[in-house]
Structures are given as C-alpha cells and as structure tokens.
Amino acid sequence: MDFYHKLSEAAGADHILKDEPMSAHTTFRIGGPADYFVVPEDAASLGRGVALCRAEGVDYFITGNGSNLLVGDGGYRGVVFHICHTMDDVAYEEKGTELLVEAGAGVMLSSLARQVSSKGYTGFEYATGIPGTLGGGVTMNAGAYGGEISDNLLWAELMDETGAVLRLERDRLKLSYRHSVMMEQSLVVLRAGFSFTKGDAMAITQKVAELSRSRKEKQPLEYPSAGSTFKRPEGYFAGKLIQDCGLKGFRVGDAMVSEKHSGFVINVGHATAADVMTLIRHVQQEVDRQFCVRIEPEVRMIGEF
Image (cartoon, rainbow, N blue to C red; front, side):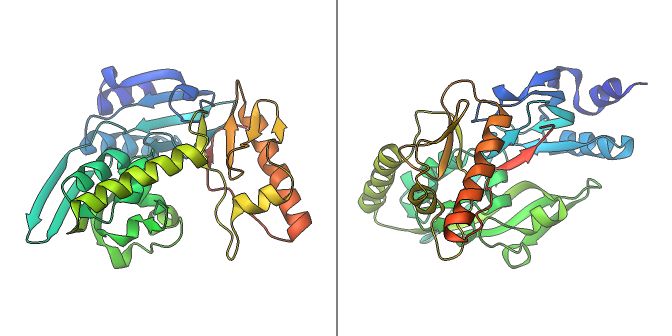
C-alpha cells in the first residue's frame, strides 16, 4: 500500500489534499505546494497521521492559521497538518472572581480573547488582534502590547513524536520570550488551560478598542504579512533599528519593509519566498553593520527555498 492510501486510512481521504499550494494557507500568501495537506478532524486523527509519518520516515509540519510562517517557493516535501478551525472547542468555568478556560489548539487566539474580554475578565485584551491559533500562540509564547501567553496559562496538553499525550503545568513549559519546551522537543499543543481575573467591564472594552485602533494605525494590516518579522533583540526594538538604518520602504521584488512599521516585511503584490529571504538577510546585514546588533527572524520557515 502506498503512502497516500495509508494516510487516507489514518486521517480519512476526505481530509487530504495533494500538491496543495501553501500560499492559500499562510497570511503571507506565499508558498509552494505541500505534497499532502491534511485537515485532521480531531486529536486522535492527528495522532494517527503523525505516527504514520514517523513510521514511514516522512517529514511533517503542524500549522494553525499560518500567521507566523514562510513556506519556500519549492513547497514542502511531506505532510502539512492544518488544525485551524478544527480541534476548536472551548469550555468556561466561573469560580468567584476567576474564569477558568480550557480550549483546543485550533481556536483562533483573537476570538478566544474577545470572548474572555466580553465576559468581563481581564488579562487577555492584548491578544484580541493576534491572528494565530491557540496552539501556535502557546508554542511561541505569543504576545503583544506588554502581555504574553505565559501570563495566564495554567497548563498545556501535548503530543510527543510517538503520539503519546502528556499534560505539563506552566512551570515545566520553559516559557520565555517567543520560546517554549514545545519548540525544543517538537511537542504539539493539543489543548491548554488559562485563568483570568474579573475586571472592570467598561475599562476592558475601552482597552480592547484602544488596542484595535493602535494596530490599525501602526501596523500594515492592509497587506499580507507574517506579522512582526523579527524578534526583539535585548535592549532594542527591531523596528526602530531597521528604521534608523534607512530601510523603511526598502524592497526586493514584491517583498517590502513596511513604511508604516519597519518591523514588518509585507507582500505588496506577488512576492516570493526568495524575495522575502533576500530582504530579511539584507536587513540583518545592515542592522549588524550599522549598529553591531544581530536581529533574528521571528517568522518560522519551512520547505524548499
């Protein structure tokens, strides 16, 4: 039996696309075809698919909304498992002034944050504009405007490379700036639990509106991008360094350093992954040359470049 038929048995033929353009599944709108693109209906289906890939020696990658991802123009040789809008159940439990939330990895962070905020609980306002899924957000310890996932995370349910499921409390997740144990050990987030505190409903609503206005004014939301392109170097702001290098508006093909926010590389037309990579390398070289500071990409990169 060939690999496709084995994958069909594991995940269901109705859930598999062959040679699927990844440009349709990333917020950058860039990326060549994945050999197999699978939308598992639940964690068990995902586990069977991952176990099959390991047994067959086939590379695999798990993605959510594709919001922090650059896929090479040559595509991805292997299986991409897509869990956005699946595995997206949410349960809420109010205990006095505390709200306990348990959610699946496929839930959109922005949607979950709006729900928590609308219930009058504070601590998640910053995430109402983050375009990724909960799974990706927990994995990268995503954050914005002074808040990050680790502030309210209690635990995460994870799947290892063998398909075994384990639950780790927050203190075992090694959460730091855009880093976690999941990134170190190729662990996949299946679910996570959070705790939020009751706040002033009017103040929460105002803060959400204020952050939304700020994003629209300061971020290039009108163009495809992968969000903030570079990690914040210690003691500096990447966008400020790039701007001070005179690189605002610098362009390679249709990849451009945003004129609105220099920390964003945007796709102004039909940018290729090669355009983006060339631009990223040039920005890194210029910041290093002019300020002796090394900036690292925040965007994850997979596939053939």
